[in-house]
Length: 225
Image (cartoon, rainbow, N blue to C red; front, side, top):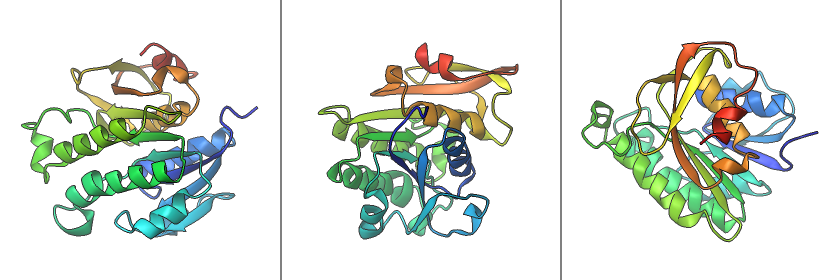
């Protein structure tokens, strides 16, 4: 039996974390729509819808969220300036997406943010103020969702690695007090689990990996938050 009924829009779908989100959604048999600028990196997938566009384009976003019950957003800046910059992507872009999702009755919004967003003097913030922009969009999400039947989850992963899922124990925290790294695959799994685990509705938490150890499931880490 599927754990989540409805269609999920993955924003930033062609990025390395986004691709893992799609893989995990397909593992659970959840209907998926991918939003990306180009479709070439999505060629591995069958039975998903693809909606092409840019995070700056409100009409493309409206088309992408239409008919979806949840959004998992993994998008992030990859340039200091222009339309791929932290201001346009992690700040204004995600805020635009949140507003359009809410207006179009998307009930659940899961945002993959970053550890250390509350630390403006962290070295990562030298990249165009990316942490400050992520915190700005986080705060906007929390102000728009979390009431009237609309829920959010904000996941703040440590530094992202490209290992396979379920290979490490995890540590979660709240209040932006921990630091470390984590595999994108495990972040993707946590984002997908957040679709149905009630404990993380309207929660913001950090997560890193710790000791190598095979994991059968990551659900327990969310249930303990």
